[in-house]
Image 1 (cartoon, rainbow, N blue to C red):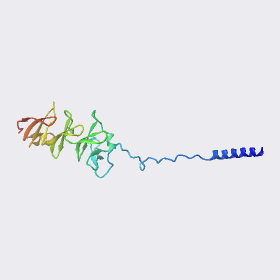
Image 2: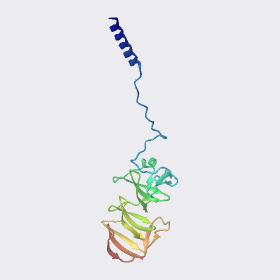
Image 3: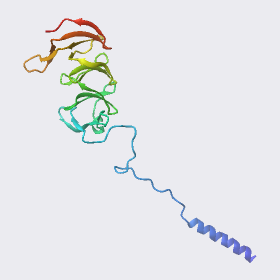
Image 4: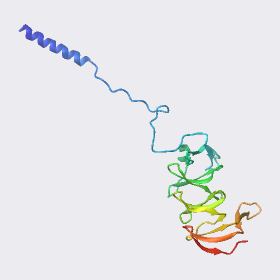
Length: 208
């Protein structure tokens, strides 16, 4: 009888000691902060660097530093802190002006899809028939909203599309329309009418 009581007492003592031991706890996770952030692979916007240039999307505010960023492959992006202040149209595009890069259209992701957009009425030239004028090496072409050069920049002057047709010229020159030179027009050279695929529809009379 004494042996049975002793055995029960020992079992109870072992159980009590077991309840007093700490159970293993999960090790704390690494904090996420400026020095320990988790990489975000959803965006390929390059970090700030020497290639950053200012931009101007609000004339009252003035130039915004570190706005336009250029990746190692030459792609242009708008910095996130600027991107959230832009007003996007129904196609998901917004116009941004860079003193160095000129007018450009950017997507909500921050990627610049069209650059080298001419100025029109103190703003970026707009899309007509789904295309916008763009200038490369002083030559005019047309790009769509995806940033694709639908019509290569081979013209010395170009007017916007209207009803599926645009007037373009080769060998023409840009001259001031008035003394203040706020507006320009193209003179001289050979003139053509093209469609939205870049096909020449007609040859027009020279514009002296």
